[in-house]
Image (tube, rainbow, N blue to C red; front, side, top):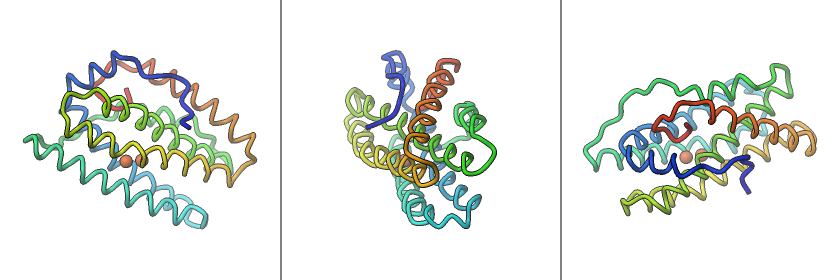
Length: 191
Ligand SMILES: [Fe+2]
Ligand SMILES: [Fe+2]
């Protein structure tokens, strides 16, 4: 069960379908960043052993997703290019508390929200994109991203009590909606 507080509107889906190359380039960056973020968490909290196995597994899986999206781009004759950050992730990270254990809980919950939004939007693309290969690819990623969402929420629960984590996730989920609504209509997974 995803924790999102809003449902993506059709305008985003139409924009994404109309700018498939841009969405795939952004998606490739998202998968790369997901792997990087998991490793960065291990770097920032090297003594928190509960993180090691789940985040290593997750990073491996995100790298596989990155490879898969690169292949989708390549088969269409499209190449990766650098993208300026949209600010979505940075704005979510700016909400994270600064002191432990809240800092770790928030970083994990923000990661959970990013996964949840990816999952929600991949589902839309899996159902409605006119390109059958892309529908299959997005459909194939859904289950993994939903699982990643659950992994991050479960990990957050190891560092605070269940009710506190639930309340904090709800607050951050509301903030995520406000961040999305404040963004210009970019052709990005999270915009
Ligand atoms: Fe992924
Ligand atoms: Fe993921």
